[in-house]
Length: 121
Image (cartoon, rainbow, N blue to C red):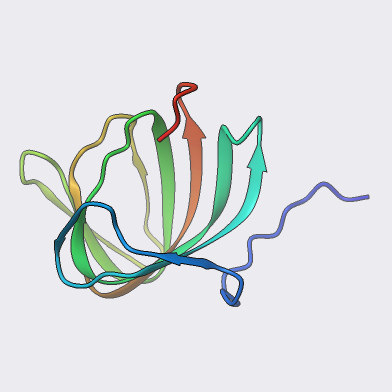
């Protein structure tokens, strides 16, 4: 039996929907389809898709790797430095990152999250 986990990026019909808990502007909604969890939920991976808007990011207690599949966005550091990302780009949000996301239309990413402490995110 294979232990390989496929991350489905096209069919998000089983994804959970939500809204950012720290909105800045717009009416952002998102879908999250978790494909993998391990180590008592300390590790997780899947696909996340968000509509336009700006919202705060707070990576307290975890590190997140992101790979943009579709769309464009900017991630802004607390000091105002803006980082633009588009399809094919990858980046890591380090533990403790507290900037914000700016999504102009829609963005879809594959994520991998590793909890850095037992309190979670």
